[in-house]
Length: 114
Length: 109
Image (tube, rainbow over all chains, first blue to last red; front, top):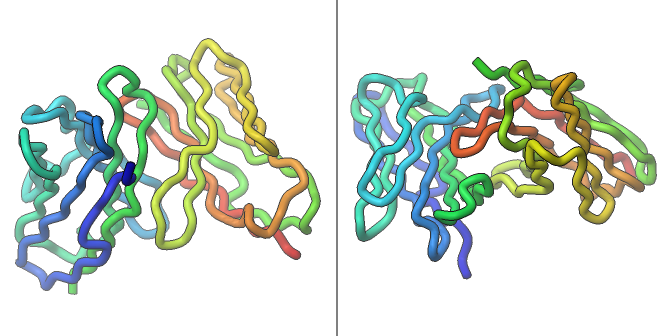
């Protein structure tokens, strides 16, 4: 049973480009969470999704950021018109439906904006 | 708003020593508290989870305690080894975890 898979592991974008980060949850997990870790800061919650639904997006910046978790395929975190301040490690976690408190984390995607 | 603090930010100890990492949180109405380990360039590994009704959890050389009334948790590592070197994070919450900034632990061989 593979763990939470995130790709790419490293992503370089120039200012103004779009970044798309992918997360495949563990088999059987229908809950996905995205967190952001800025340099020298702790992880900050961004968004919590279930299949085809956004449950809590209270941590998402109001503009340029969006997330989805379609019925089929991975969860996508999309950042439009990236700026240097978006440079960070983005972590995805997933959990079983009945045990929402146990989140399993992926290795993260490190986004660098030039 | 929940805030989680971890002190110290960095800690170095000789191999074989026992050590304690500290975590404090401002809102005692927590659901769970988890301790994670983060290795450079890698994801997070869950070490121990303490539910709000519990006071401690143990796994091997690790023991985590929870005191909700004082808003504190400790992670005790016995007989430390160089392989324990990592950043240790505590987090509170259920679906929406609030993390501390971590303690960077270095075990000196």
